[in-house]
Image (cartoon, rainbow, N blue to C red; front, side):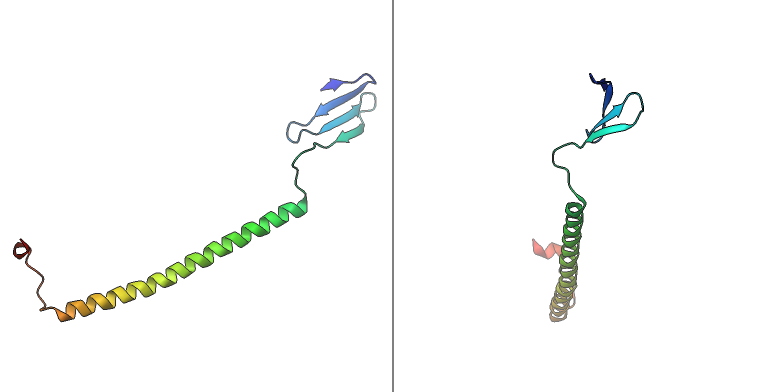
Length: 99
């Protein structure tokens, strides 16, 4: 809080760094200064939310495709293992014979 030469009080907002100029006698707001910088307006924020929503949807679709292909791949591996098992003599290999 800083008092100016004309008797007004300047107060800086700790959050947005904006400046409020208040008349000392009446307590009325005389002037306000918005901070300059990279503030975003409502439309920019909405477009960022829409972009984030699109990215989430794309990630979900990709995960769904992977999961769908995983089921097909596991089914293929299972069929191949069943075929190999049916072609064998039915006995598991003896670990001592492998030496």
